[in-house]
Image (cartoon, helix red, strand yellow):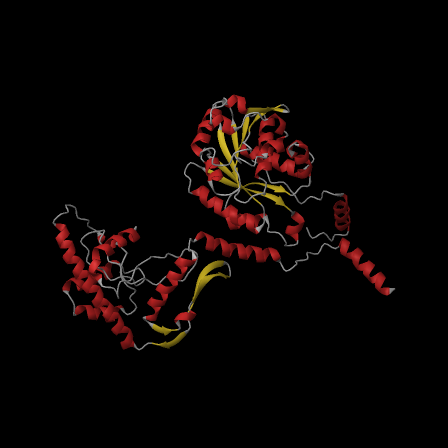
Length: 272
Length: 235
């Protein structure tokens, strides 16, 4: 089998690239696909934390590149999800320790035995970005509906468009807050899409469950009740080619808003 | 007492009310700011280039109207639905027709001089080169904006025949387009003559800035140098 190489990038830091990588990877692995996640944020690794695999890292990608170990030795298999493997970043080096070509060689080798190779790109547009995007054929640009994130995403989209080997790029709008959108305090999904003119692969709502899931090292996609988890699951299905309608993230979650909605519907005052 | 009840009542109603409070519609502010800033980001016009564009525009427009050069305002603005490059020029007075024509004629003469020098140079180089490029008539790299084409056509009648021939052919070819160039006689495709900058169309997003150098005031002893730099720019 030849695997697909997908890069998750954003430009701006902190918008949810690593969370997205962990969750999409986990979701795809649960559907039976063989997935390898690669953390290219050398020096500031976090993907291992989000997956709960931080204690099992022995060899990192730099060890592979510098031939201190074989690629197979550096791959950490997730015991809870046997189709999922992690290739961790080095914590003691920086992004100049590897080149894009070296990463491409590693990906070419991984492609032979895996269905999906998902690369977690670091923030910025310097060598880390260049490294991470070199082996990829598809990209997901993660952004939030905030000005700085959208501006940076626009720059990233421009850079991706100039790379011929990246055949397609899609937008993932993260940390969406429907009540703020309703009061016109946050840009809506349509606004962001219009400004960036990019197809959307998914919309993930702001979910406090993310904090808990990171604390525990268990990706939120394992929690069926969490809205963000469902959103990530849908994104994984879309990557597999399925047509999935976007979640209604407007549905009230907590008790108070449920009561409110009930009474408003009763009195016919709900403007929806 | 009444106040307490009124307050309580409002709170309860507020709780159940679903009216959309738009606090200054901050998202619309954000959206407009973003569109503007992305336009600036995307056009690769750093402040130095913008300054230069401004300078060239001033020089060009000063030929036709007398204006306050310091007060020329050039920036991107939200024009309702789209982004536009806005240019605002306080005009001090209109120039007399004779003034304009005199200045333009001086320009043309200078250009012709330069042409002739270049031609002489080309003829020398021709002996070394084997290839010719035909079809340079379509090259759009030089020329000036013709507002009073008629006057210039009549002027050019007094000049070399070549010029007139070029003009008539150029007029028939470029009928449809907005008044643009005077054709220059070119032997080689690469040796284009760059002169006066064109007016940059003040329009929507897809403004095309053609960078042309003006060499009016300089001595064109190093015409070769000019040719090389024009080669780079025409690319």
